[in-house]
Image 1 (cartoon, helix red, strand yellow):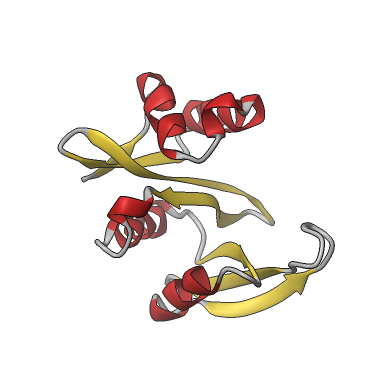
Image 2: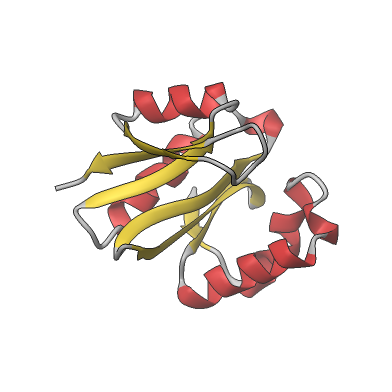
Length: 138
């Protein structure tokens, strides 16, 4: 099940990310996304197993800026469920996301969902360009 995150989910969200619990900037990012209604959680028996953050700050287009699925729940349609909900909540006719060039599993996932490469940005992570993908929704 996927639903909008609420503030009582924050610690449960941070627990599933590697070293995220100690990362105050990640906590702030999640809190702001929840405040804006842009954070989704995926649940398995009421346990948070994944989350996604989406906003419309990228040229007024939907942008999935962060998605994370607990490793034990990967390849079980959790990421697909999160993306389904992001796409259904998107207010623009095209949605965007990105993945590092080194993140081959995410690139394959996006292509399987009919996302197309839209561009590359250098210098965000040293030696690992960010690949931007988009999908037409309407």
